[in-house]
Image (cartoon, rainbow, N blue to C red):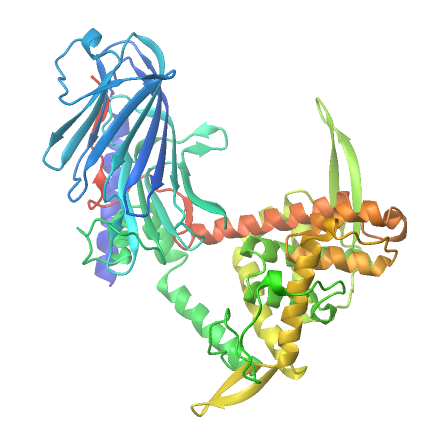
Length: 575
């Protein structure tokens, strides 16, 4: 194991040396400039890809733009189309690279030599151009032994016209928050972005306004749980981890993987998790959570549209039990319920005067803006659960020495301490299930002589109430509710709707049904609600990005690495 690691370090050192040598050598670029290259890849159900590239260029010499696509074993490229300013180029069946610039003007073509392709189109008149090239790659997605994935060089190495700015977007309805992704050959970032309605992979070399260096852009992705009907099987005898291990050779991911999120850390995390379960005296719930089992044998639950409206506060007014139900029953997406419970806690602490909220308008150079803050003024607040106590300590730590939590402070803290937030979320389930056992929501039984925890009808009732509450909040505006003046009920509506990511539905109705709410409550339904959502959402997004960066879900790209088993790539530019 040590010898293998030493070889990797030697390889990385040599790669760094030759890269440094390369950048010290004089360059002989053409006078043409490629200002930006934007690549959009749409993955289809059959594993093919519709690829669109936008080349923003200034050309002063040469006759054509070309892109080499090598090592395309098992894949075919066709349907080439090029446009500029709405004018579609004529795609020729045979491309002549020796033709004149005038002969190539507004024309395009494909050159094929076995598994190698060149995509070509005429430069036309010299000057500034924005060309849009699209084409189809059959069997673009690859089938590995354990999942489907892709390993593709989308921006080539050795181009004689190197792009200053690069952007790669990969879209598919089979990309999820569990998709694994790595980027190689450029200084920048690669992330799984979006939400449940549309996740996508975003890779670019934008470093806060400046642009990182680009050698090439390799994207390696693993689509966990996906199915493509006609994927390329040339690497079907290898696992995704095999592909990733090869690609990481000599890259910065190798050090990150071994030092920050290595196997030893994973084992210790697993041991710690098991230890916590044992200390808590909890049984493993041995069944699929989306199909809960009940002690009375009635395991079927109605759909949301079939439940009755529930106008009271569900889950026995316990936001953590409600969070548990929302998560287990998929009543909201992960980002919504995780950021929602944080926002709910902030609101409840303001209501209970454990923290204070303030706004201050600050004048900028051109316009003024509202600065919001939470003040942790109570040095010894008491809480009902260890979960609240722990979360309060995190917010307080993020607030810094002045104990005032201001814009972006929690987001920055979460980025540095994302494992603490993840551990806190992991602890919720165990602590809630312990409470549920003590309060009759779960009962211990023996199945095949092994202890299990099974839900009781009392928990089913809370599920139905929670589903009915979501339906009520969702359809609030059209139900014709009469004026309500119970301030505590409205505050609870805001708190519990936050866990669903639907607090804005309640805010709209407060102004209509309870105009005096702001005077009667500590909760400001405008500035405070916006602030809690922003603080919580930005914090969770920061956690998600940090988590992804350390688990294959994205992060900073590596300037080197990528392995040799990718498709695509080669030279390109102008000639």
